[in-house]
Length: 156
Image (tube, rainbow, N blue to C red; front, side):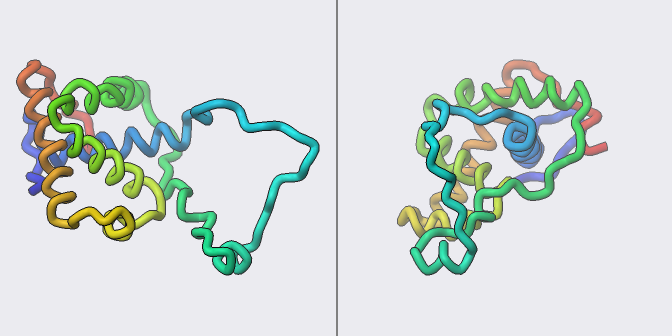
C-alpha cells in the first residue's frame, strides 16, 4: 500500500512520484537508446490507425509519453540522475519486484494500461501490485538507511 508523504521521511508514495517523473523526463528529454536503425533507401512504413488495427498491431499512440512537463529545474534533474540508480542499488534482492516496477513505470508514462499489460503477460494482478509496493518500499527504506534526506521542495 502506498503511504502518504510525511515531510522529511522517504515514503513509497514519494519514491513512486519521483520515479514516474524521472521516467517522463528520460522519455521526453533523453535521446534514443540502443543501436542505430538500419538506414536504407526504402521509405519508412506509415500506416493509418485502421490499417494497424486490421493487421493486429497496437495503436501507434500507445507508446507515446503522456503529460510531459515543459521544463525541469537543476535540482529536479540532479534528483532524477540519482533516481536512475535506485532500482539497481536497492532492488538487487527483489528482481521480480524490480521487473514489475519497471513495467508500472513504463505504463505510468505512456498510454499503456498496467492491468492490461499484466493480463497480457499472464501475471496475477494482486501479486503484481504487492511486488510494485514491495519495490517502492525497499527503495524508500534503502534511501532512509543511507541517511539520504528526501527533497523538501518536491511537489511544493
